[in-house]
Length: 85
Image (tube, rainbow, N blue to C red; front, side):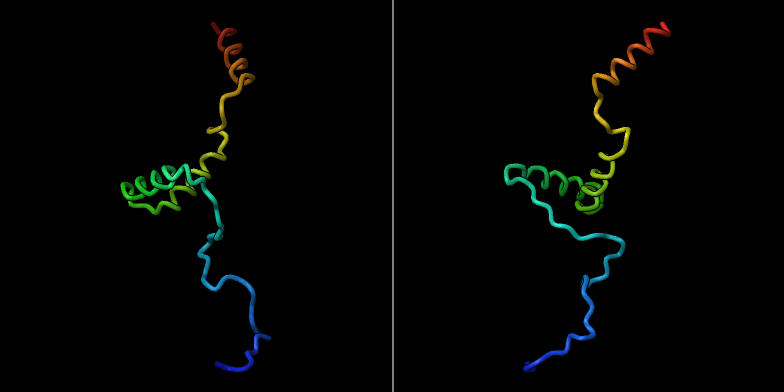
């Protein structure tokens, strides 16, 4: 081992190529080990990685179609349907 190392030309950042992905750390509740186990089981069945499935699930949850049905939206739909009937 050298006494000194020259890091003057060193570059900060990831050591590995990211391939268009961002590395994060996520903490899941210990109680909910079934969540991770569920994704791993689905991954084994689908042939995809469990992290890919988690990413797809998060992406889908952000789409407008997955938004929860609110009272206001339900009232609007009922009002429109009753007007037509």
